[in-house]
Length: 342
Ligand code: ADP
Ligand code: DAR
Image (cartoon, rainbow, N blue to C red; front, side, top):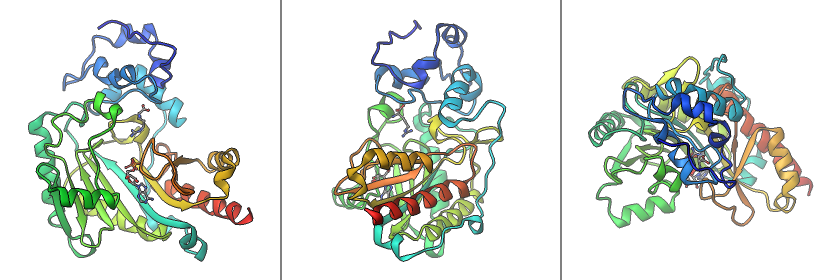
């Protein structure tokens, strides 16, 4: 492997920290799943506009390629190689009282976590057989869920056009990943062993074998953030009785992209802020103060429509799940106050 032919267009953290020395140290290394440095950085080499530019093939990659990933993780999360992650899934520790404004301004609330099975390669390096094993383990576990989590699993392989378009319309279904995921190897053998589960009233979903092996999602219309969080926690605890997730004391829940490490949680609202959207500098200033990320309403890299934005926590590692949701709640309260004043 030769040192990548970076151009001035390459702006990712991978480009920033893959110095010639780090490259020489790592270029011939590989993990037990034969995941190499070339595999890890391909997405960022092929897509100069990447922000991060690197994915891992397994939990071991974070150790084997530590000279690169430690720097990316410290830069993005402000989390050093000596820090340890803490988890807190106790919904009672969340201070998020419901009020009329939340339901007036918030169209919908969604809280998701990423998970990957222990002792299994990640989507970037998994084999067809292993990916089928993940689908079987997870869909069988889902089929045993009861009460308000009870529902149906739909495999994407052979899914009817009717079901597919209905799920996409509800923002429930994921499509083949974007060019970043494609060049990371996450779309290989698409749509084999990919699928979606949702409960009967479509407030609980699980994506199987998308960017991570599981995306566990609780969502509903309106702004009752605490109820959405409580449902997610109940589901995660039910699933943890039936499978073990890849986790480390240092990095928390292991994910294919370093941005999702730790809690692997994104707590988001689709919120109407038409007035504040006329002053994006002030909007971004408030988002920075409350550790918020501003997205469009059709997912990452999309645009906002009609003054509705996807607002979510930016911090995922070195903070607990309760803090992620508290970040989002406190930020949303502040944004609504400003919107009302305009
Ligand atoms: P992630 O799954 O990492 O959060 P995205 O930002 O791509 O990734 O969102 C995935 C899907 O979830 C998109 O279709 C997006 O529109 C939808 N979504 C995200 N947040 C909400 C929300 N609060 N309400 C409704 N849909 C949402
Ligand atoms: N677009 C890639 C990934 C950034 C984080 N988003 C994820 N993991 N979906 C980049 O390097 O910019």
